[in-house]
Image (cartoon, rainbow, N blue to C red):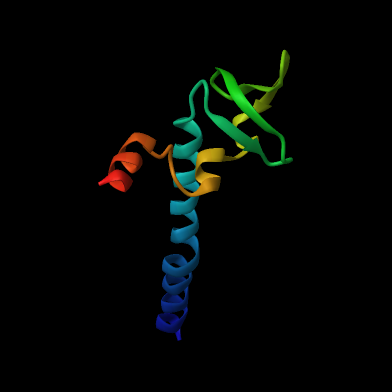
Length: 99
């Protein structure tokens, strides 16, 4: 009976807890890699460009001369991630299409 209980705990750990920890770590690394000039979306749906980075906060410019300070945890994702790709190299695409 004790073996069955230990087996259930291991199953929960490897299929539920560990993947969630990896996902959280990946999100935290992504937030820490953001820098000035990156376009982001907050959890509340506010789109803006990072103009200042501090230890725990970002200052976002959401309109011309309108800036707000948000906690790093409030950043939902980078707009480049939303499109599913980074900035495409247009010059390479043009040369491939011309050939």
